Amino acid sequence: MVAAKTLQTSARAWVLPPIALTDGAVESLKWLALTLMTVDHINKYLLHETVPAMFAIGRLALPIFAFVLAFNLARPGTLARGVYGRLIKRLAIVGAVASAPFIALGGLAWGWWPLNVLAMLLVAVSVIYLVELGGRARIALAVLVFVVGGAFVEFWWPGVAMCLGAWRYCKRPSWPALVVWIGSTAALFVINQNLWALAAIPAIFAATGLQVSVPRLQRVFYGYYPAHLCVLWAARECCN
Image (cartoon, rainbow, N blue to C red; front, side, top):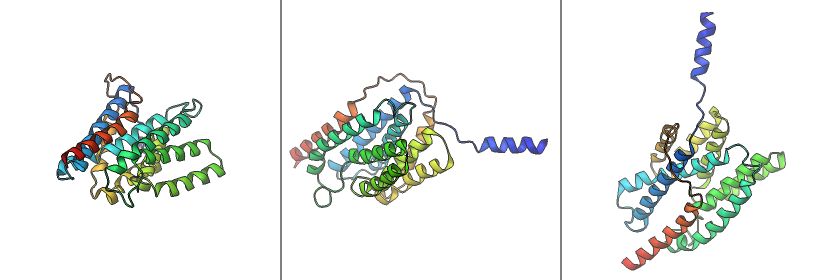
């Protein structure tokens, strides 16, 4: 009897917690990521990455953005409501618009590679959509999109895999999903040359149960991303 209770207690200890966030908490994370991204881009494009603290905290922006995207896609009924189609179209259009200032800011190989972060999110959403639809052919296509698409976008395969791992964990917490999520976030070390991105994960779990009222401005990010790149480009040109 004692042994059985011990086993039950041990089993409960290994159960992974779900991530239950209020809408206000999700929006707070989105605004936090937006702020961190702006700080990082000011340091990168205007200050030539001379402020280590700005660079460090900027590494948290992508993991938080990726999680917010994954969390929203993991909501019940996402597939039935046609969310994927609308999101894919939006990411493709705004990503293309943002390419002009993104390329103008420079620092890219061959003048255009890799494609901006919206292209990375587009690849991730496309892969998740195919996985959601299911079937061998679609899963095979999802793998192809992951492999080929990941080669052309910012943050490469680790960035795409981070979205996938977070999405799977939000759908149903499991150790494999958590390993993919944390492992791909850690793999950003190849790009960032530090592990600051991992700090985003405990921050996300800490937001569970956060009760705040933040208005949902769904399309602000899509306008803000290309707009802030244009402002940074103009500011840099004026300073030169």
